[in-house]
Amino acid sequence: TSTCSLTIFQYTSGADPVIHWIKETAGDLQVHSFYFNQDQLRLQNQSFRNRTSLFKDQISRGNASLQLTGVEVQDQGRYRCYTNTIRGEESSFINLKVDGMRDTQEIQERNE
Image 1 (spheres, rainbow, N blue to C red):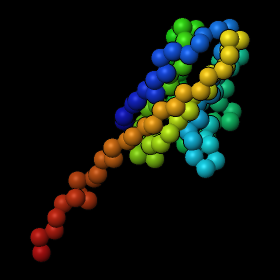
Image 2: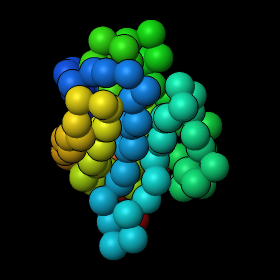
Image 3: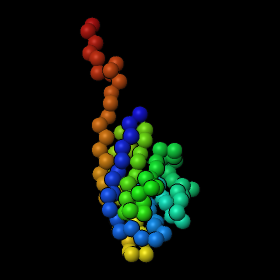
Image 4: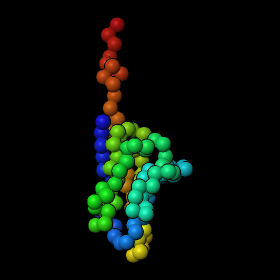
């Protein structure tokens, strides 16, 4: 399986950070949320369940990057990372492009 990191190197870190990762679609999908110093996945879209994580040891240093495992073509798209601390709020955007893999049988030519 493929793994990728949607990297936000620096947000303005501060006490009690709130981090929301959202996939921007017609009805924005909740990808991953973190607040009260822990993951908050109750509203996470089912297609991302058990596939997302943050680098918890780096959040206090301003790293809100998301790790996504089991990457599939349907994960492609625009993602927004919203962060909020006592120092203010910020939004960053990342476009994820996924190159699909084809089953070799699909691309074989038939000689008849």
